[in-house]
Length: 400
Image (cartoon, rainbow, N blue to C red; front, side, top):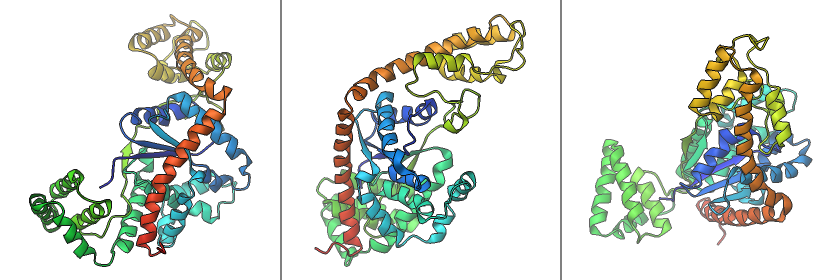
């Protein structure tokens, strides 16, 4: 069994906006206090679509990481690193590409979706076809059992699980596996060994999922086992070979409800964003000039909050009392649109004041960010190297 671990990454696109904050970063800040977390800048993934113009990627990475820190991602709680600084990602991706059927890549739902959305780009490259495999390598190399995703990304987690199963099935059958597993059972002690065999029988003969869960719990508690023996017994319990790569589970996150200034999804391509560290005067101007309910042509015309993009900001930022005031004032024409927008401006400014405060030390001294990332890359690489040693050994590539 392996320790609980969360892994999540983000493609560097430069400055982040409130959609990123409410959709991803708030969840990261919550998770970092609950689990060991690794958060990485996916700069190689940026190359899958921007391979013809990669010069802006590096600057975008640093800008994005400052935004993470501003949002409350804490390097004392989470490991922050850059994908390309851990070359083992590429090695695992390469080795797994040797045993991944091409059809598995072509059936990933986002493959055709992205081709259609980015039809102006030439995406007939292996990098684009193979990016789901690289994403899987990102997860599997850290043996992360929890991957925070939205519902639309669930197929990718299942794809990663299938890859882990295929890899373990093909390469987890070490010579003398069953004999080594039986020897490992003896190390549990007679009482635990008997329970282990009982749980294994319940699961393999009767499909009893509770037996599997109890067997896993027993192995977690067994302090006398080496890592290799623990992996063997985990695989033997399930009826497979030695478990090398961990099948990740999806940590389902709610879709962001953060709208753009026009009511559509907040996106740079729509030009409707509020950046994470927006200047106060620019932020105020953006919200004051937001379109409102088209029925309110004059100040005296009543409106309907449900048809107004500003109302969606109130849903996220305002308390019940303020929302009641807005509803009453809008529907009766008791307040004007500028009055309605002011509580939103105040709430977003208050949120961003803290973000600007957190970001300032890193803006004053960029070496602080470099140091955080260097430390994170070292920690991530040690974990990755541990996995790769076992992968190479399983594939007969250790040359020891």
